[in-house]
Length: 79
Image (cartoon, rainbow, N blue to C red; front, side, top):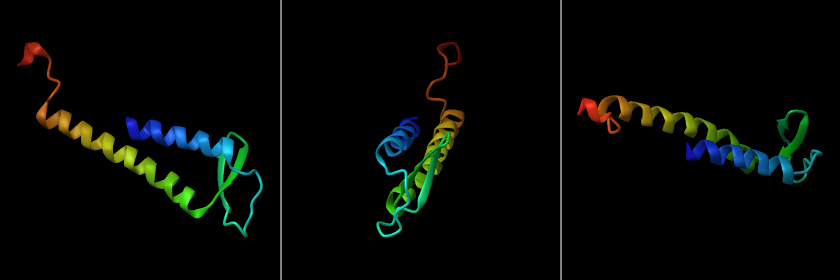
């Protein structure tokens, strides 16, 4: 859940602080579109955005598998 919240916060941080015009000389050519508000990211920022979401999915899947196999939050009546 923490990585998902970090991804959302980073998305809105970039949306509020990055330029609205592309600047190929600075490397800001990757679009981030938030409901019509388009900002441009550089390669490092873009890589961070696209790598955090799969990490969110992976961590959720790992947590789900741990819950199914180990049952750490088993209700007291099933113990």
